[in-house]
Length: 475
Image (tube, rainbow, N blue to C red; front, side, top):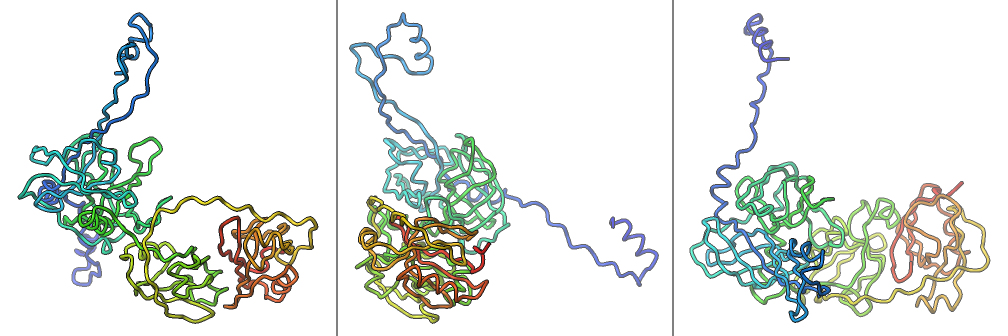
């Protein structure tokens, strides 16, 4: 109903009117104060890097292609002139952490830079030293020779709420001191090839040149560093991602103290816990990180962690999903002893593990999958055709027991493929080693329709769990 209709009704009914005043409508956010107060602490970064130029074929000035290359800055060299390296220019953003000249930006902005120039909002320019950088968190620390500088105030990204307004200040496409705004679209976003950063997703317009700039909340506090965008053509498409400022500062502190970042590890391979997996392991709800395998002789192995454990807490922090465990562990200083709480055989168990240092892993040659058996058996009630492994196959896979999935004839759903090897069967909190096809088929036959069963599988060099409900594979 329109407002003037409410007024007419009030005039007719007077004191008997039951109309409820509409709540005051909030206007759009005003970023003027934020820009005036925080803008001076945001800097522009100009980067010069040297690119090796491959030699071009010798062309004379009479050659028809000579003018073409000259117009685009690729002047062909003469026979007596060696090729020269090219200087490449790029831009980025950053912000001042301390009044004595420490600046934070993205690692990809200054990586391989031969010269870095920091330009302040008041137009002063300084040559910057790259103190250090960390590619995993995409953080770099710069130092300029200046004092009495304006600095940002850091906020708490954990207090951010999806839907609240945020703003970015930076240098998109080289346009200095540009402010853009939007809302928090999601939190804790995991991106491909990086599971250590719980990215803040926003719809703030971010473009090339914004990289390394601050993401502000409405209090004028920095809650993240604008790092990545999703784009099919290189420009803004509504999906922007920022590194939470607490993650960035943890890396920056180590860079300032020792020039590099060290991370913790405990030596486990993990996967997400689905509802079906939780049912199979007897866990009340789908939470934690399921341990696929434990590195022999590693920290977790020494602490007593076993394959099939579900890690519920690490360093007294709740592990709600598998993506949270690496983020917790990598933030812990190597050599620190921390408590672990795991779910094992229907009950919680407390362990202690000494965190080791995470180092770049060298690629290992993948082992061959077990070859298929020559004769096929009959499908079980899940539509799986199983066969026993030969001694040679067990030796190749370095396992004592296992059953080969020879064929899938039903509609069994889940992460399961022909050629996988079943190492164990888990149901109702019990784990039974797979010693033979007949044994596994008998176990499946005894389970009620609709019950969840989890297989510990081996595929090539990988070991993981896959949960399926009994009956899904029946014709």
